Length: 310
Image (cartoon, rainbow, N blue to C red; front, side, top):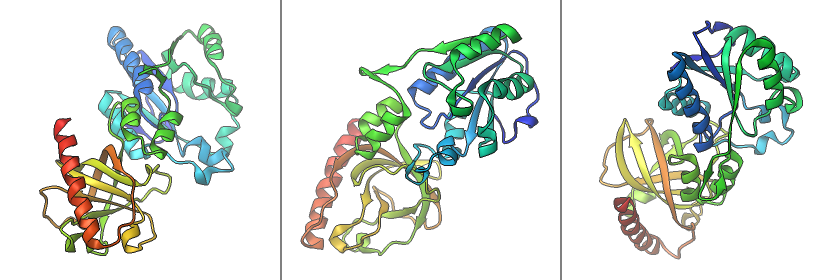
């Protein structure tokens, strides 16, 4: 997949099938749009073009932007879109000046003039342009005028739930990762660099890799103990992770750490990915390190049973 950080760098491709959106979750609903584009491109001998924005418009326009968090970083979003099989991804820098473009201006000046689409595919609830006034109806009108097709993909329903990024964010904030993962179509994950902790985990037989998150807008799931899969240099391990403040040792600050099973390597300063499978229990304070050690042994047994059954 070719990635463009400036739309002017894009050179027209034959029979461009285009979509537009933020695609934060790259969830099952988004994937339905992408798969429709891929199917259409195969039929027409065309190529797929996804147009997205960075930073997310909420960070530029929303007064409460500091509290807005995202399921995927830009890097992870690009990685997930590429894995689906999209040909081209254009990342448009979102600024306050760009936000002043009317929906019609945006489609004419950016999409039609530069991309020359033969078809635009959008999700059922997609709106664009200033004040989000752009709609499916506007695209139909412009499609008739400029000779391109428009198709709206209906909502993706999973287990009776209409899939959306906002619903997935809510589930993750509540620690309901299993439900969130079903709507995502993959396991929610956190990627970060391994940093030094206080070493207490090693003294009680459960050494952990503590990770630092570079992106302050990454959504962190609810505090608790989780069954996890851990990816270190493309190698896959099982483990149990903890998101929280380590109340037994009066740590206070939020930490993200994982005990990687059957693993004994120095990985300080390396980047790892923790995929969260199930929330096993709440984080809680124990009366002693010995009591914590006993609980962790229990947690490991339960985690292995669950992960090996999946």
